[in-house]
Image (tube, rainbow, N blue to C red; front, side, top):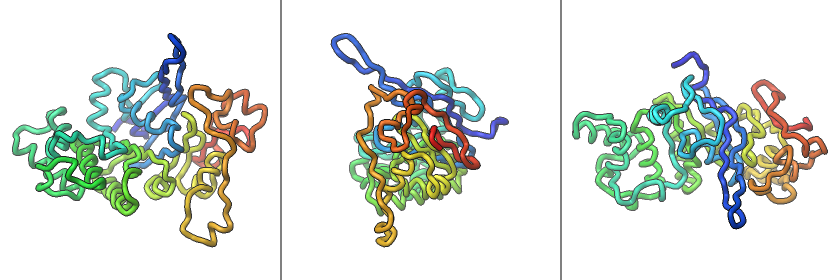
Length: 322
């Protein structure tokens, strides 16, 4: 481990896409616009926000599945710049994708899906060693060696996601980017998969960037939470602090929508419904990206985008009116 106290750092990450507009013109879609955070070894950072806010793009840009427009990704103290850096990082940082139906190749057996990272990074000497590793990985995620010769379509959604997790674990990574890994699954299966992530973290010492829109899931698994809106992080802090004392008007609204299975609580707590629609990332408002829907917005909010400032220990908020 390098002398950096963080395993993964993201500094001012920007991911802009050119979208054709008119006959020959194009517009910039700012999917991620200046995101910074850092994750300590063994920690889970939950990244939350509504659909389309840029969460998945952050995860994919870190792994250079999308080449970042600008900004820095630092893994274990090393800035990731060249193709060689990216390949080295991918041995240590893996991704579990959202949809277990589309992220597994239907033409490949489970053994080939899980064994592919072993093939790419040449992590075995003999065929027997390869098979042994595959069976070991399947066992780790609650499947057995009999599943190895079958195809992905023969499995349920939860089992497919376990295959995806086994594939991510194949290279013995230190860090896993979980991109909404349970949102496509039944609630009962979600709990099993979340518990498995926690057990794996404990036994293998994994570090997670856990991307999700379900705040209850994120609170359960995360040490810290970062709240994202329209390509920007608007609040970040310890999970309990964000959950119990949200400070940004967007976080307050987001948390008010979380269903609590307590009728007395539900009766006394009103949902905070935001005015207006989410602006298009193609036509972002000036200043603070949230100001067009914010009950606290003032003239200053239209002029300048607020930076994250510390409002309590380790609790950062980007808002002019606190």
